[in-house]
Image (cartoon, rainbow, N blue to C red; front, top):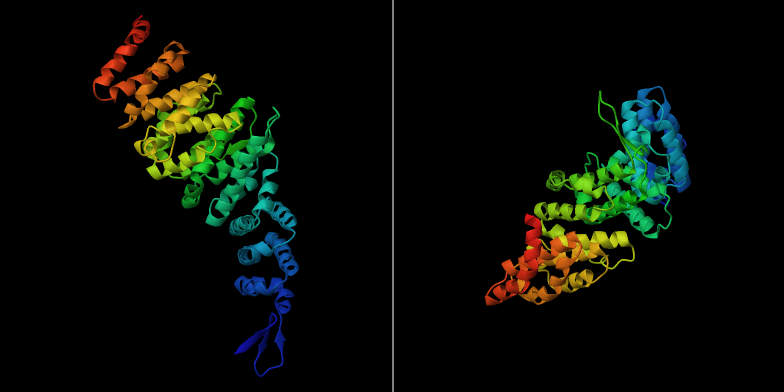
Length: 444
């Protein structure tokens, strides 16, 4: 048996002491014969030795002998898996790997090198990810391959997605210039590649509502910038024999929204959105909120109640945000989520109080969204009775702008149709005179 003393191994009955330096000084020879043996001794290396080990292995990636180049890549990925957090000179390592990935590496060596970068990014996310985001758009195949591999390992996927979400949330909330910011557009490109054929469905579902809201908020910001359609920021590989598809900032953001839904296994929402022309609505600043209403309808129809409540918990914190884009996004989600009974029956929520406050605001979109929420709330048992007191107030909206008037009529209809008792007849009689001109206009 042997015993370990201060990082050294001493064999009983012998005076020789074996240090990790013995292995470190013969790094490459050992790596060629057995990379796993060297990985096992990596825990005894200092941070400087560890980094030098990776930099030395990096030189072997371009070796003409396939076995040697693969051993170098395996050594790098093994060390990064075991002690990736202890690496120093991360920027130098990233630049060195990128330089070599842009060369013609052996396929197996390239695959293992990408895996090494995935492990490095998972352990050093705040250094690696900004470096990759800052590279000029559109990215070449090497950069795209890196973002793609980040979606193959759960820990890396979660760490990278959290950072990307944070960038979208923080940058857009502080954005004051009319010039299009580079980094959030790059984030959308990164998401498009990460979520294409992602192998980490559970990781994406874990972050799903927050990720979806961040990307939808980014989309709203992009369409308001009115970016040129010829501005290519991302190219999606069309596969063997077909051309790659170019994306401008708006189409890239839309693609990211679709991929978030698909990667989280909510294909039904995408199908619903396709059938209801949601993508066209979401691409237009004027009709964006209507697109959100329709998309939310698809979510209500296709997602389990637990997801709806997670979305509700997120948007209610943004209902009175100082950022108008987030406020419109949150309120529209909130109002349309009330279409689902389990949401409308959530305890401790002042749904009607919020909706009434919004229809009192001068903004016509807020009036329409608030009335939509009241219309949805009135669909559920017990709610129409409590909303009857609003009828005199809602009558005033029958002479408003067309879309507001339509929502007011729907709200009154649902309150009446889902109410009970003689009071319902009285309520209908009280608004019938005002409804007649509207009916006549339709028939005319």
